[in-house]
Length: 193
Image (cartoon, rainbow, N blue to C red; front, side, top):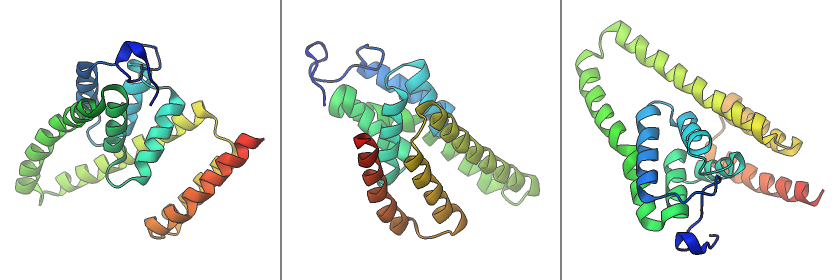
């Protein structure tokens, strides 16, 4: 963690600003409200474009680490971002902010769905919402890739991951155990060049 005398040992945002506890809570509350069903695109928008807490590369790195850790990648990112800017208190505020609204929404929707699940158009709406969420995830990945401009080896690892998971439907753990070391080696090789 970078030391900064003005922020009590915690880091500043990409825009040079101090990210307060209330900034973290309300930023992640907004992410939780807007990102229902597809949180990564909204997390990226709020964290990078709107609040300028992280650069595109920093966000991609945090999201990548969050992807390989157990649990949802955006929750893992909330933990890392909260810790970076406000330590343990920041972690708790980010998690609370991100989970508060979805918790209420999911509880209400679960009760409604339990009552009306046997209606055909309700099932069709759920399938349509899932397709929309998948599109948001793919769109966010493409938008990030366009701005980061990944190296050819990174693109090769991405294609290998898509092939292994999306087409071959191989188990996730072995795919991750093979591709993570390969991607680390590829990144090390690219830095030498």
